[in-house]
Length: 507
Ligand code: BES
Ligand code: MN
Ligand code: ZN
Image: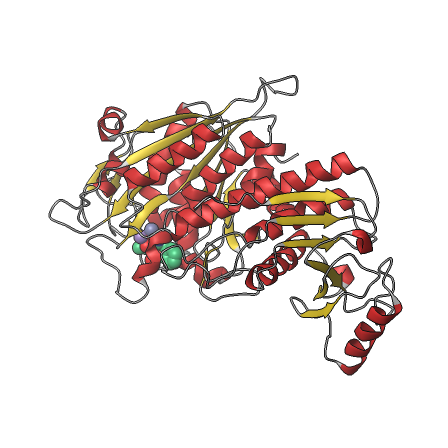
């Protein structure tokens, strides 16, 4: 079957003139006029229906609530879909993206072939158009790729148009395409994280990331176990040794070209945890919920998708993505609690819990990113259950040093629409990693703050006070329930933060 390439476009036209199957019009709870007559061109009949529906309480314009009517003759569209957008003042990029995504899913489930969405007056049209295109893209993501019935989740529209009240068409189209690249990147990351671990082994993960990187024009380096041994990556290889599947480490390099390319300035090092399945190893996890551990490479997928997107968007800064890939299995060759491993930087680590594997592979990867010249680091990882206890599934944990870099990441994440919240790295927490026999243990037991001690472990591998931040996405990478804007499964957490960081270096 030939895949239909969806068309994204932006137009500066009165909404009534756009000929589509379904035209989405966001309605705010606090729109002054209950009929939304403020929407330019809304005819008396349609305004009457909306007014009635709102007065009776049938349509309250609550988030993700839809009210769909056949369009009257004044409209070129076939149907008007009013979508609840909550309160006008409460619109954030994240919320707008989710509203657009819910429109996309509504169109998809109703087999709409062409859809348009109107950006209401009073917002920055280009930023909004980009976010809306990003959100609409989310509905293209397929969570049921292994189902026999490929039509059960509808069909993504062939044409999607963003309508803005005024401005420059070319700039609008560019903004829509930017949003499309970002939404696509999030979908790629989600797709990889949803893949079962029997399909997405470390080698397969490396192959797919390599293909993505080559398609995006990146320099890709796939390091196999021989090379990893030469580099002395004892922590990465230690985690991998319990599995029949060999480890890989993928490096993606983006060098900007053209007049805007910064040849000096920061080299961003993006590092992502790529555990294709985490059984816990000899410190094995309980059976309940273990199936979810196929997404323990969501951080690595986010890094891969983001570096590719940065290249497609022509980012001005040099970026290095480093993704260590392993499977954490128990076996006769697996590492044991009590074993001592030697990291690539020479540090020795006493393994107190083989389930604290993420920090081990990230430690060697962080070291390598620095070897390759990264001046500013961020790592993304489904690292600790403790982070889920602290922040639930609503926000990712943010840790790092110095504070200025952490603040930068916090700002970037906020505007990119990823929820993050800082946790402190007070010196006292470092004590919990002391070992009798080696330089440190890998897992502190007892005294709490598990997300923080994991971050402290990583920090030990960052040299010369290089700016480094760590995003623990254990709670945010996976949605346990289906939402109006996203099916159950991988969410694409941190992808947008990494893309924004690559495009701006935080400025
Ligand atoms: N991949 C897990 C963390 C995780 C838990 C992600 C739940 C998503 C949901 C990680 O490798 C892990 O097992 N961490 C341990 C660390 C402990 C042994 C110190 C944990 O959080 O229990
Ligand atoms: Mn683990
Ligand atoms: Zn893990």
